[in-house]
Image: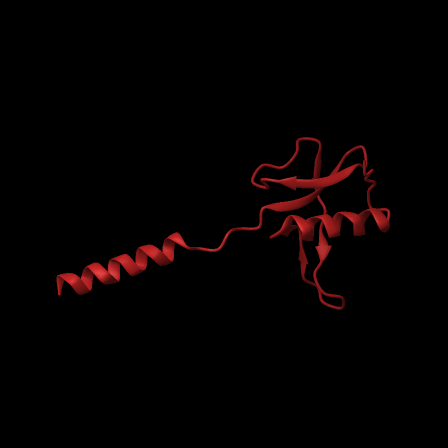
Length: 90
């Protein structure tokens, strides 16, 4: 019985340690109109805010955080293309 309880405890510990990573990237628009990908979204910038994006066309689900840098980068270029902000590559 002790081995069984130990195995269950070990299994529970392994599931809690392997939780999925949180979304940690966002597109930030500063007050000057410049936008960039922002990491560590727990604390946002002092002089700007997060841009919101619609996930699927026709649905009303909006989000501001992305799981990957590539997803945030695509959203940044989409926002610049639609003149929501500007971004210079270089």
